[in-house]
Length: 202
Length: 208
Image (cartoon, rainbow over all chains, first blue to last red):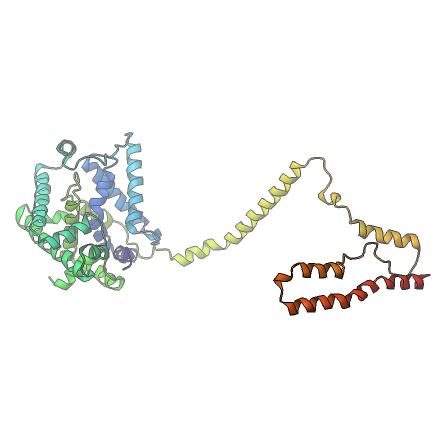
């Protein structure tokens, strides 16, 4: 399987004038990009602004993208440069991201939230999404959960997962799809039935 | 929702869909809003599994980017074809290479000259070989002559007796028949070798 074929097919569509394909790229990478930018600025709202700027710069520079590297690698460089420039222009020293920080560090979470300009309703929705997805993952059968976690957390390819789980690649693809479907069913309820903020995803 | 389509969408999200299918699905994905929303939720699931803390999962980032880009012109027609762009750049590359090589050579020559100040050019050190210079001088001293001068030092020859001794001394390395043939060949060649001295006298006699 050719790596990055999916992104490349979307990129080619954008280069031919299809803006809708760029939406798909933004949806796919927005969380990763915000997370990346937060190594330089801790405030999530500011990180989102920088990520937005990076996406717009990427869109404008897309005619020059030749596909020599993966799209995300290229986007990553743009985001890093945008974040550094933003930090310099605001005369702030970059915040080093502590890779050793425990993910359960509540003080960090609270600090981040206190600078957050989002409404309490938004914070509740983020928590709701997170707990729903985690509950759905916990409810998955073992083989489905292992497959989706190896893919999303470890970043393994289907072939590597097939080797790890000792099953055909087609089975891996099916397991990951079924896991996503099960999680997505629960997630849709949050967006459509719960707080009614589904439109903000698009 | 078509299950096969969703399965393809999941595989495409993971970059595990064949390129031809990606092309078709990318076209649909860019136009089908429910499919795009599902794609967005797949990204959220990944963000939660990776425990990307501090990232707002309901952030309207995609909508904001979309709103800004709506005012932008589409990229169609802006894409510079790769070959054309490279074609424009390529013509000067051989010239630049040649210029660079020339300048490196020139700098090297200048540097070598700077390293040996006051010395004569390198060619001055090359004296002609004695044999080459001596022969015309001798010919000039003797006046016109059609006689080829005999070399003062004849070629080095190994006497046949020494070769025969060598073969006998190393006889364990050769079969008896071959050894005998060699020894008889040395013996028969001995007079001819000795006779090579004779023509010198003949030449001298003719010259005189």
